[in-house]
Length: 51
Image (cartoon, rainbow, N blue to C red; front, side):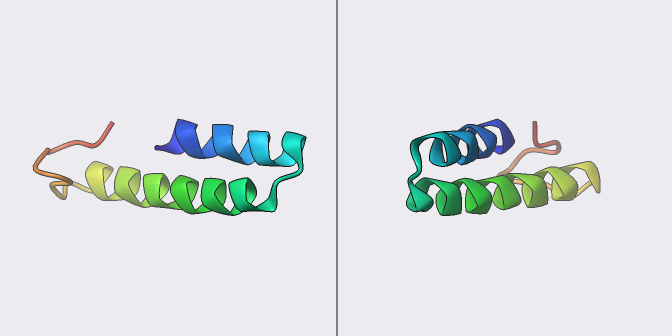
């Protein structure tokens, strides 16, 4: 999700579409939150680690 968020963010900046930038930031933050939860030892989506 982090990589997908970065791709959307870059595409939004290059294409000048503010909606892509907003969605990219949201997806990036969600991915970062899941990554932190996974590394803290919490099960995310039924998995012990979130990659």
